[in-house]
Length: 297
Image 1 (spheres, rainbow, N blue to C red):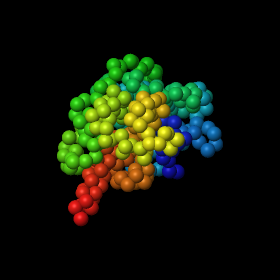
Image 2 (cartoon, rainbow, N blue to C red):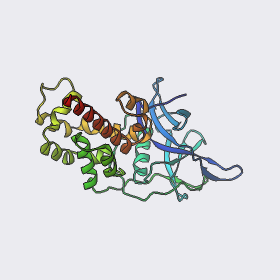
Image 3 (cartoon, helix red, strand yellow):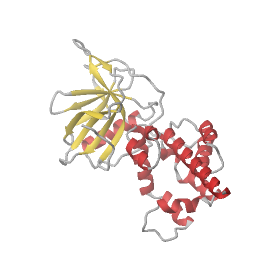
Image 4 (cartoon, helix red, strand yellow):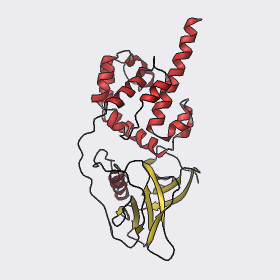
């Protein structure tokens, strides 16, 4: 059955499946592109879903009872293989992380385990140490598994190139789409790392003309017209950070094709952070060209 990121999706990230080789304890990664979703089902129960991102079909839907399952790294694997184990049975379901970078593998696993223990567990981001990317590798299914504690990492600072691209994006004028795409970095960091008050405040301070453009997208119960001070309070609020984190995670799964089409963006804009930002820039450039043409008539 189809699955998508909804308001009932607690956590979602890219991951493929792995299967035990016949007649052995060796686990091999399946190359199919997929995503793991933890959702609150219509039955009121927690569901652990694996969705094939190529066919848009969920091929595994497991009901999880609190404290019955764990999601742990296979220690004997040189790759990024994890196993979902149940205390109430001998079930084993193997998965491998498919994010381009392995830097957040521990973070995803820790959040999975938090939700498996308590579906109301608050997700925690920005706790993983950095690590290099590694392809999936064979692993022995008889190996013991354990949860690696997340190591504290120093606060991320966006690079000048990322800030320059974000500034170009928000300015929404003057630059051509080709120039913006040429300047666009491959964003390995999350939107939570980039859209911080420290990074956003200089943009609004140096370009106050951006503030009125945000008014149509702000909550309707704010003072009208909202002031720059109101915008500052919003970007410093926990609600803003939580919304950015949720959108970031949804973008990373590649499951937002339908949503971005409703925003007037091509479906490929829902495949990740960089494609989304490039599509927004292209849309802004197109609207600016159309507005410029109307002004000259």
